[in-house]
Amino acid sequence: MKKFLALLMAATLMMAVLAGCGGTNNGGSNAGNTNNTTANNTADSGAADSTGDTAALSGTVNTDGSTSMKDVMGVLTETYRDVQPDVPRNHSGAGSGAGTGAGLAGTVDIGLSSRALKPEEEEKGAVGHTVALDGVAIVVNPANGVEDLTVEQIAQIFTGEITNWSELGGEDAAIAVLGREDGSGTRSAFEEIVGVDGACKYTNEYSSTGDVIGNVASNPNAIGYASLSAVDDTVKAVKVGGIECSEATIKDGSYEIQRPFLMVTLEGAELSAAAEDFLRYATSADVAEYIAAAGAVAP
Image 1: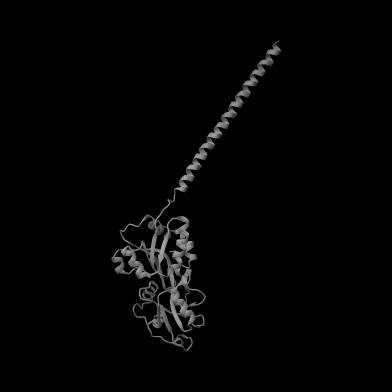
Image 2: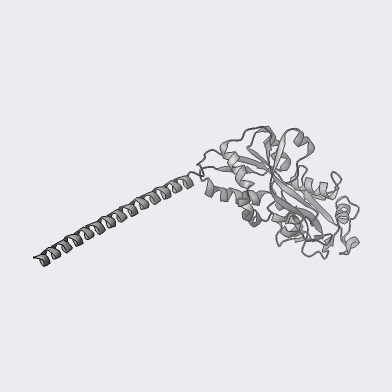
């Protein structure tokens, strides 16, 4: 009998222990479920926050100005579409002077200038936002044997003091001096940097960088200037003072003939939300690789 009672008590004790273990397991499972729910809620909250980081915008961003900024604007417009797909962007290439004027007049959201702002433009309230840096390459026909020119020699060519390639170690041929039309940012930047502002004697003037490139490519005696981003293998960029026009020499400042690419706004004028966001995007560090892909240099 005593043996039976002892066995009964042992069995009862075992059942209690098992019940206790079962309770612990259930409690552990519930605790685990609670933790999972908390984690899921946190993850959901984080996803919502991430989605809300970039609010969807609408409206059109209108820009006008430098034709030299065509490639840069093209890549910025294309990549911005991934950020704000519902914000169309219209761009016209009327030249830096016209673009800056349009930005000041408010006829476009953002003007585009491929030269530093002039004092009189800044006095009117123009504000320049640097998007990229660009070298103004001095281009000749690939058949031309001249490889290197000093800034002084370039000035003498464009002002008519040097008129024959033989004076520079080239062939005995008259130099055809090609350039952009008055008001072009490329022309303004080139003439100001070289010190020949208003003193150039052009054989022909053109309304776009592409026209300058094309005519230098077709004339073995021609010389012109163009944005580094526009230079292709149909022309040859000569060294200036022994320095090649390249991304590296523009960035380190060793190439002398360089300029900024600017987005121009009017001081104190409020931009639309879409225009403000596009300006922020274009001047951010996030676009450096796109600027490089367009042939320019991130500032």
